[in-house]
Image (cartoon, rainbow, N blue to C red; front, side, top):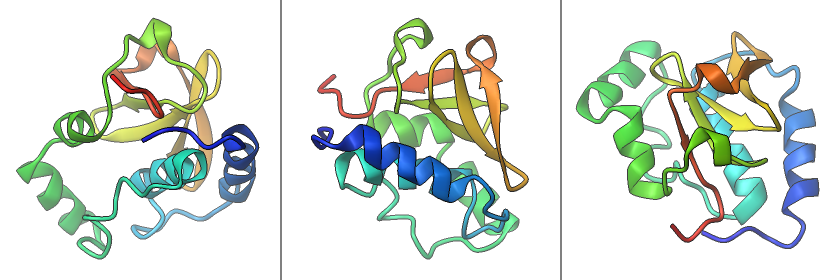
Length: 131
């Protein structure tokens, strides 16, 4: 996946779109991050999971079969949190996904884009990097 020429503006528009979206299992943190990746690259990292879960129980069943870090490792290169840049993916609180903005990442928690500091991230993955 490579970033589109206008990725930054597209990412900013996606952030604005999600600012006040209510939480539902069809608009959860995974779909939030997928929307941000699509904005940057035009590619959907969730294409194989779309339609496979609509409830918390179904999501947890998928995560039991393949933990979030393993899923991300298959699609994106890991980067050290200190080298994460705008638009990269961050993981916090076991299965909570966010998008790096600067020193923080925005996580979609209970229908709110909440910043979580870099020190609390459990992993980061690069978007639009070759490896």
